Amino acid sequence: MGPLFNLLKGVFFFEQMQANSYYVAMGRIMAIDYGLKKCGIAATDPLNIIVTPIKTIKTSSLLSYLKIYFHQEEVDKVVFGYPTHKDGNPTYVVDLINDFIKKLNKLKPDLEIDFQDENFTSLQAKEIILKSGLTKKQRQDKSRLDKISAVLILQRYLKHI
Image 1 (cartoon, rainbow, N blue to C red):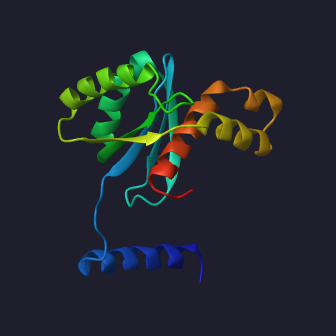
Image 2 (cartoon, helix red, strand yellow; image 1 turned 90 degrees about the vertical axis):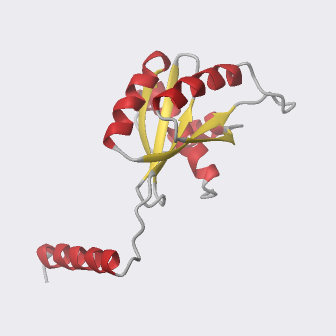
């Protein structure tokens, strides 16, 4: 029984799931690690099981990128990392996030917005990158840090970690 059999078996199983209403189509959940210069983006698969890093993008280009992404993928919710000081008070970046959310609501009014504490996600992301076995040059790629931070935010939100 080769790969073709496994593929056909998988297609049959998917068709059965649809026919028996086991499969419920859902939109993705996206996380954004919002920064002054760059934003890390991560999203779930359509069943909201697996979290994948998507991209690191300039903050100035984020809205236009999301417009394209939302056209290609169904996204039901966006979770923003909520930055706070050590004493628990929000940082000034929260005001920038709220301003961005107003623009995002105009782009997609039915989009659900939520927040997740992002404390120590950058530190955890650095540790993950360090332990990943990447070369020094690959580890120095700062865009990787933002994407991994977004993944950690979304995994926390989904209670995967």
